[in-house]
Picture 1 (cartoon, rainbow, N blue to C red):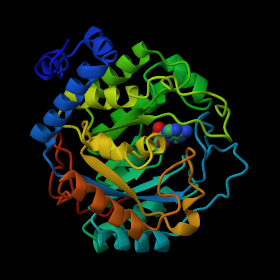
Picture 2: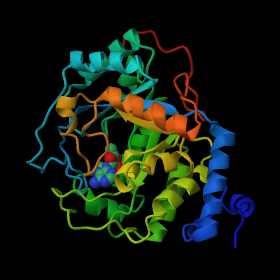
Picture 3: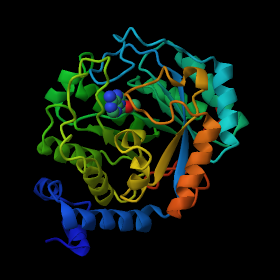
Length: 361
Ligand code: 5AD
């Protein structure tokens, strides 16, 4: 039997694959000890505050065909949309009046919105609000990342999804793991705070895959790491598949807790997919087992139901005011304060001041 104290000696930033494989099998009291150790590690290294990042899903147009994703190009049932630049900036101003201190501009992976246009949006948001700006729009060239950085982009999110190149190829017919990892390297070279992460339970993954995913997330030295359960979507090729851990749902929290102990200073969100698996409490439990970030949805009501990456995505029928009220109530219940300030990386804080020269694509 492993105590909370022993958990920390087994799972720390130097943990080996063998140690991770051991921890990924913990159950019962050992699992409870793991959760306590992760919560304690989170408190000590990133504190009690929970940073709120407001997501704006500005387009669901996508050129890719990821086998798990509800907005994949091949899903003809999706009504496609692209918000206008004005709509995006207006939404950002609204977000800035609530508890979120970061806006996450997320979209399907396509060039439908020209890079210059997104640059203008980033500049306008930075000029009119105090929000930090995160973009999540897939693989782009290093020069585009640098251009957006000059426009004021602070951070970028791009999950590697799985560390197994063969499994990656099977679920991503039009990209490679290598390209994805190169995008992460390019973002780092461009001085952008970088977030990545992976899906838990892709069909065919093994406990070895999960251990390697954790090690890759650690070795990439990421500022933010988002992980969440794979949830089969009915209008995708994986409609009939089961989550690899469907018979052991604790795996999702085991991974999250181990991730915190491996990467004590990373920002780790309580991702929405946790609420889809454990309705109304999934994200609260995540915040008590290692997570320190919460993402609220601010996509206008008229588009929200068209951005279903997986079924049961929470808040699909809520307004963004309702999301703000919900997170305040959740944090109050957990006794955790709302994060003040931008909630930048604790590992690679941004160099101030930001470049003044006129950005060029
Ligand atoms: N289940 C869970 N997560 C999903 N994502 C996409 N589709 C699904 C799904 N069916 C995740 C991917 C992507 C992020 C934006 O959403 O990991 O990187």
